[in-house]
Image (cartoon, rainbow, N blue to C red; front, side):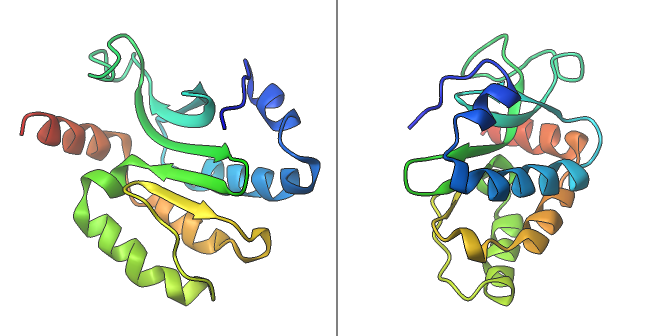
Length: 151
């Protein structure tokens, strides 16, 4: 379920009211812990943190002219989804996250390739998301992205 929004405020206003506080807390957790250089905005129908074109002019190879995506946060019909491209591209980061998750949540990890789904709003591991957000800089993400792109 994509939310048709043109701004962060517009996106958040369309999230079900009972989920807005948790969504805002996740948003703030990422904002407060993400290394400098990422740019927040609406991308792909979600709130996303991207590498701006000023930093990485080549942009995203799938959609030339668009910023390089890194993390996204979306309110879906039955869950909140956190997308972290670094976990998809760097197996060590994924392994770390999977190993740490049970230390922060009593629920089973519900995860796709780069998507973590939070179905229970009362058991989101905010401290773990804060740690995950700190784990990769813009420069490291660009290096990993370019390395994987050339394979």
